[in-house]
Length: 132
Image 1 (tube, helix red, strand yellow):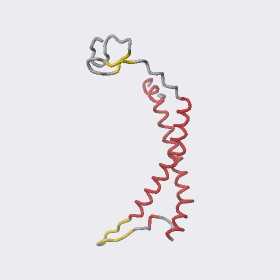
Image 2: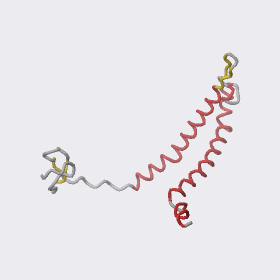
Image 3: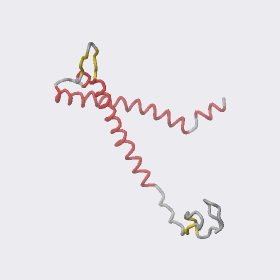
Image 4: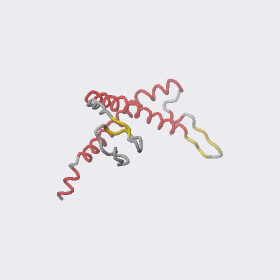
């Protein structure tokens, strides 16, 4: 039982559980935006209330519902854009703000054997192990 407790309380599992819950809630928000904003906009442009009924056709008795694919693509683009602008950009900006400045590059010289850059104080090349 101790191993299970350790596994569940590990950071990755907790983070994943939080992500799943937030993803479900975020999906509900995106569905509300699509139903409340995008669907009426589509109805205004195409005269039909949703894309499910747009671009459907029958061919030799088979019904092709391209509107369902269009609806799924619109939903995907909206979710991807919302995740990018609401999560990815702010997190990247926050990480960039608190990122450490890179250490100034130590002076180097080229290894005579493999021409890799090695520190000036090195006595052996760390790539080819040649004495320098």
